Each structure stands twice: as C-alpha cells, then as structure tokens.
Length: 254
Image (cartoon, rainbow, N blue to C red; front, side, top):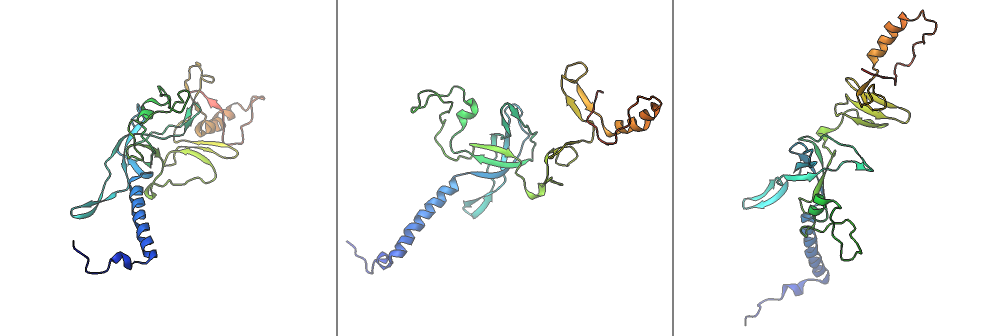
C-alpha cells in the first residue's frame, strides 16, 4: 500500500478555510439551480396573434451563453410556440389587444406544468387526495418546475427604442402608439380624439334599434351649424343661441 510522501493538504487548512470551501460548494449548487429555474424574461412576438386559441409564438429577447468546443458563445433560445397571452380580464369583461409580429412583452414562467389547466381550465378536474370533492384544480401532465414552455406572454413591457411619445402623466389613456387616436379620462372629463369619425354602437340610440353605428357630432358639423345654419334661422324668435363651448356631446345619426 502506497503512502503519501508529504503532509495532507487538508490538514494545512484553517477551520475558516474549510468552512469557506464547503460554503463555496453550496453556492455553486445554488447558482446552478438558479440558472435552471426560469422566472420572467423579455420577449417579442414572431407571428401575429392566433385569434382562435389566443396564443402567440415568441422569441426570448435575451441570448444565453453556451459552452461549446470552441469556447463560450451567445445562442438564441429556440422560439416558444402556443404561448397563452395575459390580458386584463375579469367579471365578464376583457380588454383585448391586437398583438402583432414584433410586439414586445414579458414572459412569465409558471411553477408547474400547465398543460391540463390550459386545455381544460376548471372543467373535468379530478378530486385531489386531500379534498372531499373536486376543487377545479388540475393534475400535472408531467412533474416539472419552471420549464421554458410553461409560460404566459404579458404584452406591453418594451425597450427604449419603442417608448411612447407624449406619455400622459396626469390622466388615463387608451391610445394608439402614434397618439392620433386617444380615449382620455381625467378627474373631470372624458376626451375622445380621432383622425376620422367617432362611432357609438348602441341599440338604445340607433334609428332602427339594431345597433347601427352613430357618429358623434364633430367640429366640422358644429362649425357649419354656427356659421351657416344658425344665421339662416335668426329671424325665428324661438331659435336657440349658438353654444359658446366649442365641444359637444350631442349624438347625430349619419
């Protein structure tokens, strides 16, 4: 049996050095676990929204460094298909967004496999072993955590090249990115701006009670009303005076 010709190197370490070495091993393990656990990351859409399944195909916007035979290289994560979108929704109402190719957003990765939940929701949910009846929760198709395909796409998180111009800091706005069409809500009023006609669809106010689109009186009609119509009826003693406010909320059928 061979014997060592020199002192054991471990015996030369101080207790603090031994503790540091053990702690570093644990830190490496934790780092590896954190590397494999996905949480959230920016992404962009590579195909227009599928309006039937309401899913998108996305490309993660941050490359991963991969070890290769020629050294570390930056690689794209393969595109992820059929990613459910995340929109404001609840109580029977939704705010829909016409998501297009190139739109940016945030991918949120789920803790567990979402396959059965995505396909069935709360329908046909099995009873859990610790429950008296089915709660609506689904089992997992595969036992996994923070997998790259268990994600949802939250549109709207964007990079600096895509910041909005004239961002309103004192009102709520639903707007086009170019700012040409805006629905604005302030503490005292609601303003609607559009390059063309503004329509309101309502069976209660349409001429045929069938939901026909009605146009709000615009500035052109109002100016005609003041400059042309009102002067022609001034001889009528009961004719109303022109309003002084340049805006109106009167609805006018086309």
